[in-house]
Length: 454
View (spheres, rainbow, N blue to C red):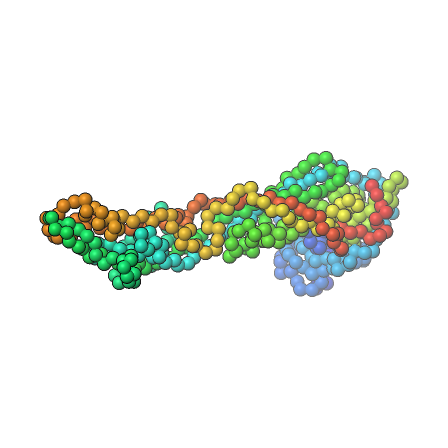
């Protein structure tokens, strides 16, 4: 048997040494003697022939560089992938003697899964802490015996804040009549003579810009039931790819619960595909090259043996036609038992999310005044200054003013550090509730295959 690849220009490429159908994509890979890319990469249809029989056709997807033996690997689309795979093919007459092999493996009854999403939380804004500073004074308005105020002294260990405005403007406080809540004068004794000194009232504008940027790690653990006949537990740690959905959301339990539901639904699709491929029982056998080259992935096939009927779908084909060797194809068939078919089609819905570690850092998307301020300290407000003046004797008002200048009113603001750990990890647990069976899974088999057992 002569295997040839016919190029779109009609030229035949002889000496094909290997033909494969990948499991993950509907394509054929053909290994040829070395041609230049310009001779190979042509628009149009490539046709694979055995003698004069057309085995498959398709368009060129990729051409590799030549290997040490001067061979190139061509990836060609497989037109047979358009087949819906509903037609059953009986391989019994084609299987070579003593080539049937059954996979032997145990399966878990539970899969302990941890999903991890890494994301960057970013937020920024502007705060006016003037009202919070004024609230530290007994009357709720900044007052002092000093005529002017300097800037607040603010302290923060790391960056994250920028002071935009720091101003203190003298004001006339509201009148409260006989209550005199905001007195204009304070009592002081100069020598033996009682005297009075002016009190000053201020309005503060202290505006800061803040910027928050925090790397976060969210982890969710749950258990996925697998096989009713399993005898061990397996653990999977998976980094979810669709974490961009978290950007801009508040990392609150309610929000993350909603987003985790979406992430788990997406992740379970890939997890189920992986577990199905890993634990679905398989049978391999050898068939003639000509037969293997016409098979496509997902095609339902059956083999009738003396004691058992094997039924399933093609999951891999490796056709070899090396010179001097037997021209054959190794076919792998996935045989899906009823419990695995039902598990594959069952929707598993996330529920009962609980924290195992609490949230840290900026929980809300906006920073509040209370969250920004760690501490505000006022030193020598007007009331404290008057108490100190009352405990001392002064010969003149000049001495009084000198003492006030030496003990001015000062405000210290310590801001909460916005830059915390390099990563903040938040862990949760949840459980899965089995939903209804989904129709149309790739693992479903036609009715004429469901009677087959191993």
